Length: 483
Image (cartoon, rainbow, N blue to C red; front, side, top):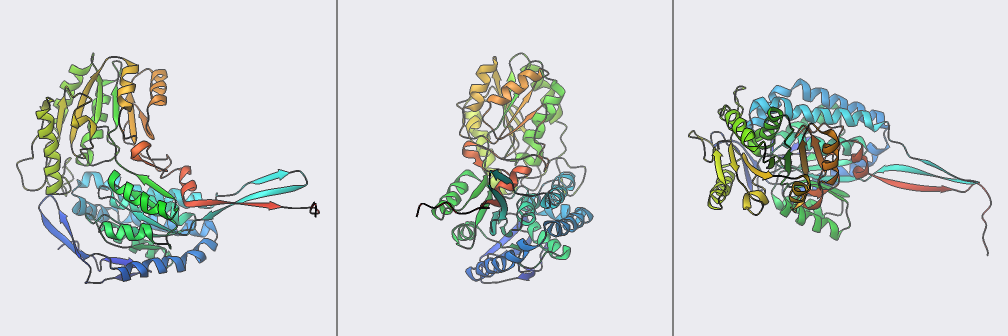
């Protein structure tokens, strides 16, 4: 087991283990090899982590924001210095190609830590003149925050949640996905080395039961989840019972609209990024590609030619562009959608089968002549499967793009910027791109609407989700009372 950590959990600045917890295995899906074996957090460990976070948070909140920022800056520098090793660990845990993880995982996590490190010292309240009297507001941390991560971007998601939480004076207990348990532990160790006081960032391994325990525990003041819609409904229900604030980044079935005046080469490249990067396992992917009927044949021709050149293989080889899916079970699920699309009459342009090699590999797949009612156009596949749909008119494609329960992301390709802004303004999506796709700089808020979740990660918007406002009225004269 070549990626075995020192222990399964990280609590109060030290490694922690309880072998009575259920076994969790991390599998390198390119080979089926078990690379690490861990144990699920027991109730005693959950208590320890929450107690440690609660005990450490008040002192952390009392520190000068610039001091908190310095620690996050040191952690960001350590992430960058160890990017190669962290990227290799992430590749082993997720199966994503090293070509991707070197630039998109720990590196983007470092960007988040750096951004919020600088943000921390700029947080201020307001003064409100009221004539003789005045009022002012304060920004206060929430307390102990619980983060629940997904398996597609483990260390990035951990950083996206931890960076604002810690910068603004909170503590965090983080539960990574049981599918990818390893990099959050590496992050916890880096935080400790950077000087983060013990108890402020704790990692607990576990499945849904551990997440449910965090959601319902009265010591947790706020929850942040990245995951599926069914999981989101459960977590929201648990948090709602205790009236806890929640931010949720859930699934999507996002539209990518290509108008007849689009730069086709750029549109094809974006569509491929929006469907094949990370083997299609990205929640914001533009999996419903609406191609204007006038350019659809040329679009499909160029798309098929470029897709045929994608290099699949060993994810640890930097020349590899396509890695395996997260597991054999998930591959079987995605292939089920392919079979369903064929049965419902979609036209297979390329791909459609697993690759003839060991591991959970699937060929990049494109279906054309997809209609809105097909399962492929309605449900999140979460694999390298693109659905191409036709359209003729602007109003028509907007209405069809919005006809979904999801609303995470959307993209528009056109040379007419007036039309681009007009269309984006009418699309029901929280994160949108014009002549680009799936670029998520930490400076820009990220999140969805409708069943894709609520709240935002990153950017200035994160302040609203990791702090609360206290209003103070200051009387400067005698009290006018009728008694």
